[in-house]
Length: 324
Ligand code: TXA
Ligand code: MG
Image 1 (cartoon, rainbow, N blue to C red):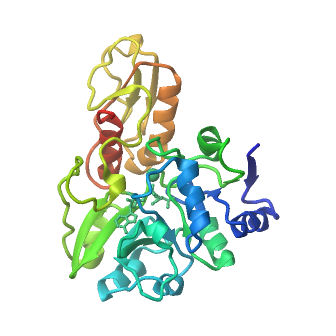
Image 2: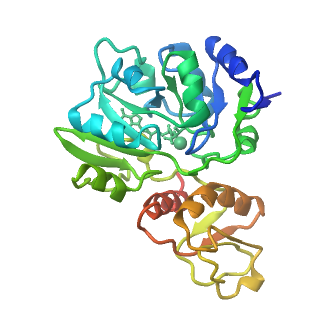
């Protein structure tokens, strides 16, 4: 049986450290989504993450750090990377930076690439890493290809038979994964839209971020998690819906009813007040709830594409993509 321990309980931090020291993974809350964390320097611990998730080994993991010194021990910061870390850490921004030869992040965590994705999370996750003293590799705590978890119960539902400990920090504040940026030759490329809006980053550093064309298989893998079908519910998703079809689960945005909603299986709203932050925080939970109604289809109303809307629409498009 999986143990679920509230982060506010006094013994929780020590219990988590004990499991991590044994080289086993622990599901932890972060401000974005729950992560499945293990020692990023220990190959057996990293292997246990891939196994619990059923994740392909070519898809590298984010190394989470407690402070900038811990990050500097493993990757090289350019002046631009320093500025980004200064502006957005701790927080939902992941930087892909060159590995140092003296660094200790294991190649299993980076899938053998010459770079590592690094992020400093907020709150309890950061305290845990500081106490552990080494970076924690942590992908989202869901089975590979499924919707990311934003509550401890989501994790227990999805991975409860595969891991021993889930730390419960309540609902994730942001609700979508971190924004991932690659830094090369002073250029910034968006590998994944996420919790920090692109506009906010562009404003902070005064330069434009390139958006590479969406990957659809074939070609070199730059952020393997960017493969099309991801975040998949069982039901088929229909996006930008303006009318409901009989038997569908409806996900509205902005409080506006869809035509024909009275024939729908269920009706929920990402944010009745048109707040994209609220919509992001609700997104994965509402997708799971809509799926749990047993509806064959989920219709989602249009969501604006600016700010956090870019990450929301990215996740919706992946969830709607054809499955293999
Ligand atoms: O908010 C988040 O980022 C959450 C929480 C737990 O921190 N983590 C997360 O991890 O979303 P994951 O594994 O689901 O997504 C990590 C993404 C994947 O798309 C992976 O391919 C990409 O980061 N990635 C990791 N290392 C990379 C590297 N060296 N170069 C390019 N992409 C990399
Ligand atoms: Mg994931």
